[in-house]
Image (cartoon, rainbow, N blue to C red):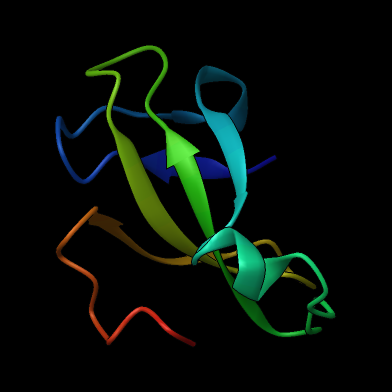
Length: 80
């Protein structure tokens, strides 16, 4: 089970309290992309807390959350 902390309101809960929005990036960039076996970037909705969409980096194999960020505060250019 993933433990996620919302970067906007700070609520920390398991993944059932959030809604996954799929791979991070523009739709045309993610539709035909092969999911790597390392870190993926995804959209998540803070459904229980503030209701804000945010980005999250998660390791696919061990499910470890490596970063979360508010939309617009990406720690890189958002294309990778």
